[in-house]
Amino acid sequence: ARPALSDPLDAQAKPCYDAHALMRRYELISTLVSHMEQLGWGPYQADHEDANGQFEINWDFDDALVTADRVVLFKYMVRSLAERAGLRATFMPKPFASLTGSGCHAHVSLHEPGTGKNLCQGGAPEMHGLSPLALSFTAGLLAHAPALTALTNPTVNSYKRLGARMTSSGATWSPTAATWAGNNRTALIRVPDEHRMELRLADMSANPYLMAAAIGAAGLDGLRARSVPPPPTDRNMYDASDPVVAAAIKASPPLPSNLAGALEALDASSPLRSGLGDAFVDSYLKLRRAHWAEYMAQLTPWELETYLDA
Image 1: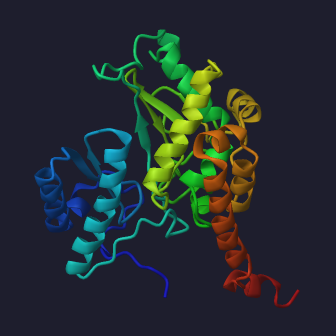
Image 2: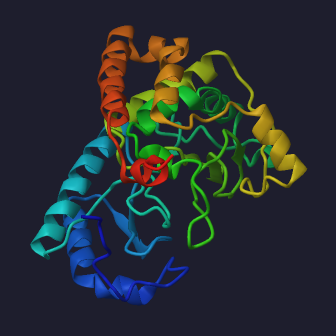
């Protein structure tokens, strides 16, 4: 059976920050937030997101490993609390074709060992305040985005979110090209302030440990090479009729359109192989290619409807 929204009243065309829909789920969400507070995670925001039935909760940042542990426990808590309420929570990247998908945006900051000093800030205003160090890390993420996608977007369904058609709300909020910008949610990398970079590539099907490792490997390669990113594209990246946008898309590494393409990019990526290890990459490719082959063996209702009388 196809999934259906649990709240029939959550039907606005543009439901982002819908307070009424949030309050109808107040008991479940407040219980979740209370557990997060007791665990010391520092939750600071809970809101209704851009898709009907979709919610987002933010908590304080920490080291990559600590954060990955918390993502795993967070998903378990959400599912368990939803089941108690007679509901089913999903982190599927794109459960509804017409609605905005569920991403897993990684806010990345670089810090000095020992002191914890933030090393991202102090750059030029035209580079959105990022330091040369942060810019090189950003350049690594952009250059290796196609290969990164195999780890940050590891399922067949992931690519229904990436590069998707416009949703009923008017935007997908997923990246279409490997570009960066200031406080611009249509770019692959958003710089909300000079203290951090937000990589908007991943979705919630990603293994958070592998995602963090892959981000580190790509960014560190940029640091070692002292790479410099292209100028930021502070435009609506969904507007392909804009010649500036079209030029930026043409100049950027193309994002894979499906899992098979992402796996090919990872297979060919010397920097990610070096950072993650050949043994891991080869094993991962074997497993995910088997997943792709299983998907390709399926005969879908769309195919029957479209081709049965061909």
